Figure 1 (cartoon, rainbow, N blue to C red):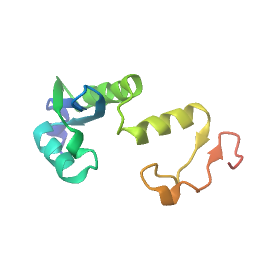
Figure 2 (figure 1 turned 90 degrees about the horizontal axis):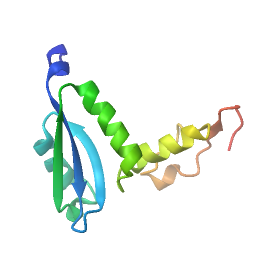
Figure 3 (figure 1 turned 180 degrees about the vertical axis):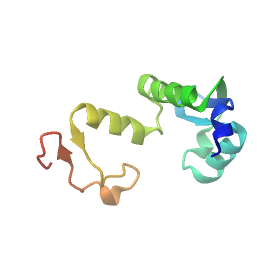
Figure 4 (figure 1 turned 45 degrees about the vertical axis):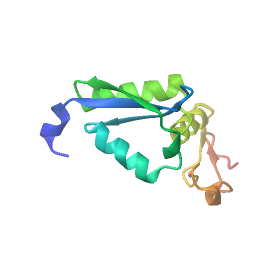
Length: 117
């Protein structure tokens, strides 16, 4: 990313299913291209019924809005961000765990006090 890209408008987008359930929140300077990627790669692709796009003046603004939306609105498929935030609030850190990969679910976690869980 070039320094010029930092000043370009960036969107956050919300993906909903047919019943209006929020599936995913993301950010991109090219939301249509990013949504095409989701439609090709994500297991939830067939659930997509509608999308809203909200533009922000800078990438920094969009990242902050995305983080807040994920935290406040709890989209179904942003579980990695949600789980990481919840564990961190509890003082638990699981650097080897990827919530999308069941093979890592048995990995050890470390508490803020240095204990292992």
